[in-house]
Length: 199
Ligand code: SF4
Image (cartoon, rainbow, N blue to C red; front, side):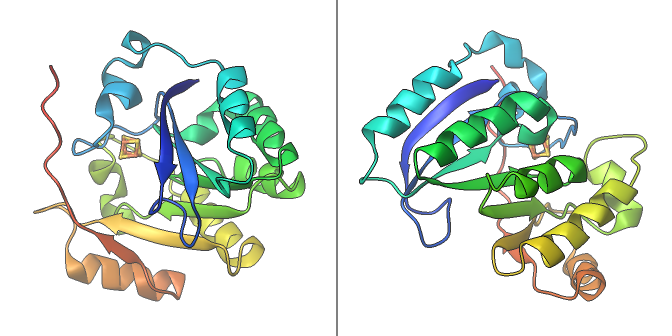
């Protein structure tokens, strides 16, 4: 499940000193993805770090770190295995931040119900008409995305963010303004960076 660990980040968790783990695999195929090797090109080529190793690392950082960010790939596709891991991290007293593409609203709700997630950041890929194309897919059911937007607004009122990567020739400012009108709040624009070539 876990393919990478960044031992210290001052930017991934707003307002907190944290570590970040990267989960492998994703249900999207964004052509501009910065983690495409672990997301969908060849996640199996990367060694898996056992959850126990991360838990031990976090135990060694109690009083030094405030939280753990979980990003990917798309973390929520790991379902119960990830929920269990998040529970273990919470038991150590850390804050947990989840990054998601919003395709698994039931995961986000379940994590909220178990009180094992403190903050959720969700990618808004584009206007709904261009969502599948931006995610590198032929078709996409948009309903789960809409549901996740509502969950973040209602269940994480002060503890969420929506963000968009401004992909040239695909995501336009007017698209994001439209999505802000739909969501009813600000979307953070992230600068597009050329993905590294796959070796
Ligand atoms: S949803 Fe995120 S991790 Fe998945 S392919 Fe797109 S950018 Fe990469």
